[in-house]
Image (cartoon, rainbow, N blue to C red; front, side, top):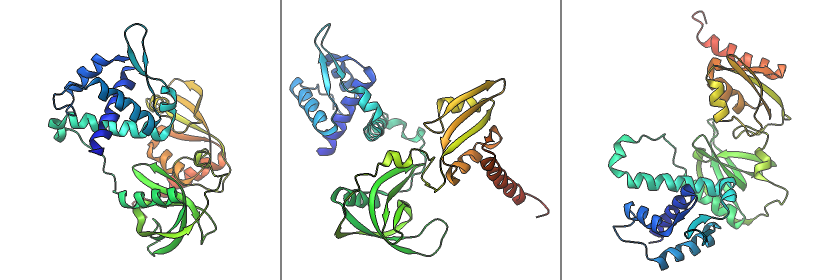
Length: 302
């Protein structure tokens, strides 16, 4: 019952958000075309109950403009678009509702595989909510041996279809990142911790690409992007600091303010010969060295 109501709330927010302004009659027409309706109209009283619940649960206000036709709209639409969590939740459940409506197309819709981290994510969120330490049995990417850690989770981040938890590793005495799909076992302890007021998750990752946080200071990085890939970079910025500083026939130069991490190197190399590091020289040499080692793997004489 709760899930059905939740789906209906998301459906209503999505319809009004995409329409920008819409009458109750138009909402009901779309509702009747939805698989959620079972062919039944939305009673006006139910509609207003949903509005109240949506405001309480999601802090999304659905207002009515009584001038010119009683149009409904989302009052704080900018907050919705700028709030990463609410925007992600809305997009996720909206797509889910579209797929439910198009169930007869299920064999024609392909998805990217995503490792299931549901159990560990649920426990991490519980530890974050209650301010309790967690004990992790963990095997990292580059080490076959299992490690045991006491962890104080500060935040979680989704990156390239994988969930990561960020927080204080007591044994290390520093903030570390743990990939949830590499946690072998985890249990929440009774020991409480206080979330540090000076820790800001967005600020923590502000100057980094991906999940790796290095001790390197952020620097101005310029990338020369060739051909049609420049248009792709314009539509899908690599980082929020991206600026197009030069445009010429056949290429564009983009400038960033980021830490030169291994995550960033891997991302640049994934673009192939369409992306070249221009500066700083130290970062260009580091990427060039990785490319030389890659080329060595394919050397017939190696």
